[in-house]
Image 1 (cartoon, rainbow, N blue to C red):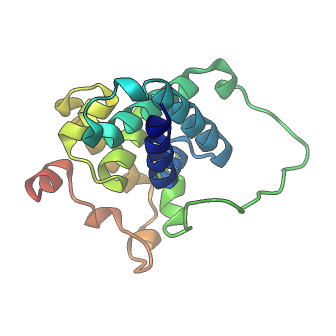
Image 2: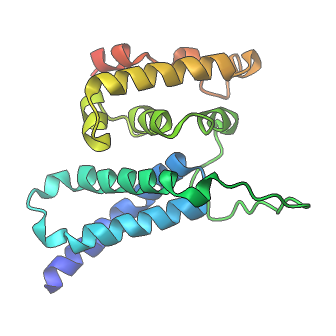
Length: 184
């Protein structure tokens, strides 16, 4: 049992920062990302002894993470607005996202959850369409259509000033799902 715990601790130490970044991109909230990663790692730990193919641990952990994000999106308390007289200060400490392309990220956060998940897994995690489909439990065709719709929506929403700013990734430079698959 000790060896198994040591293996899990090593995996967690190596992969937790990447899982946290992905969770933040999916949830848009550092607190929610931390909660989702903690739950995903707890579930992975409980099934650690059953995972036979250690090479697929990243994929398995990512699937658990995405499923936890889906559960979070479905919770009714997420749909309620909280109105306050004074906006709270935003604390930027402990945030894994480096701030690059912050404006573009604000537009990505406006996408529906499934489209955002596809964009994050496809373009941030750089997974193939098949890997995204397996992670989300959807077909490759759905991945393609969701990515296409998401990029079209982002191209419509992103101001032209951002598109020509050399310090930001431009949406016109992002490959379409078909072009990205051809390059692999």
